[in-house]
Image (cartoon, rainbow, N blue to C red):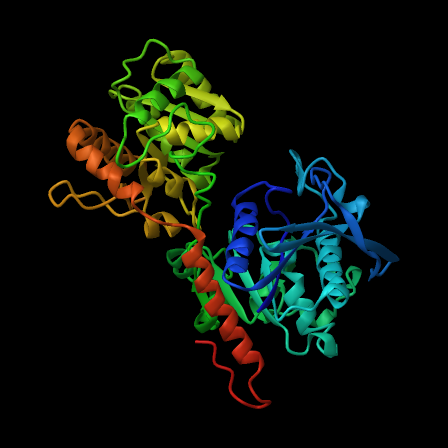
Length: 492
């Protein structure tokens, strides 16, 4: 099948979060299954192309003030996937992808509307797919445009759309006058389409117009249909629940494996765990912890420092946790209050609490390889990747039972020897502290602990299984699109 991905970021070309990892890995897994896959991305300032070639010189994009003219650059083919980049320097040649520390770029609606229209127009020249697979609000106008402005275009008559929600918290909200600016019909500004509490909601438009909606874990697909996690769109999702499904993200074990990790101080495997001790020593040295007892358990954190990631809970318990027999190493950046908390604790407990306020890929790998436990107490987590990386490294996850964290981590039972980690349900500091203490207690029995490590290391969350599930979704969309006129289209 011919599949075209449209997204605002994708490794190795651009990245701010997990979306980029998915867009970098899933197309390759689909190509390995025999699908013909192309990927459309904006060409940002940070995009590095070694063999760029302009394949579409000019695409005319209408706005209500003037036309804009974009071009399309080919980045060649990697892993059987053809990559195309929408080039419009006024919109994409900027320091960051979405905004500055003071907030989002004020013209983000125009930026990603131009991107979406350019993808559709470019596909007429480069090849119209059978299915457009769009990701998050930045590409949400593609299914909207196909259902409205392009509804009578014969080039797209049988083209289906799949839309993946990576995080419901980001929806693309803009004032009503955005619609005429983008040359979109005013009748979209209704409660049954894109109107959302007096604003235009790009994500809502995609939920209304896409043939199929997916999320990045089964649990999250259920959670976002509730008021607690739906961010006001739970009713839209419940109305079309039959075409909403969760497919767990995979991970790239070529990059994240203790048997091949180029950043780890030593290699190790489930059969030979000795190398993890060297990785632990290297990790403590990297954080400047030289006087601590190396036999103490090390809890690792790699995260954006934000309340959504559970740092409000961590703040509630850190002074008490610091008095336990353990070491915490944290890598990340975000809310100043949490950055300052870790810096304060580091001064107070220099050999027990350490932090690097940054994002450093090499250090992230060292934490996965060298820590004994990995902490992810998220308020909500659509999928999460670090807990899956941690399993492969024998770094036991401590997580809250939400979204993909709940789907991927099985509670440890020392009596049966089953399970892969520790998790709690109630979102409060006391539940988190109790669960960490349970993990610290379990760590004292190293024979049992190594069985727990090996349980996690034996799990396989590679992209192969997820790609097959997406293939099934594409088939359902195609079957629906090819149904005779007037026939009932059933997608489940």
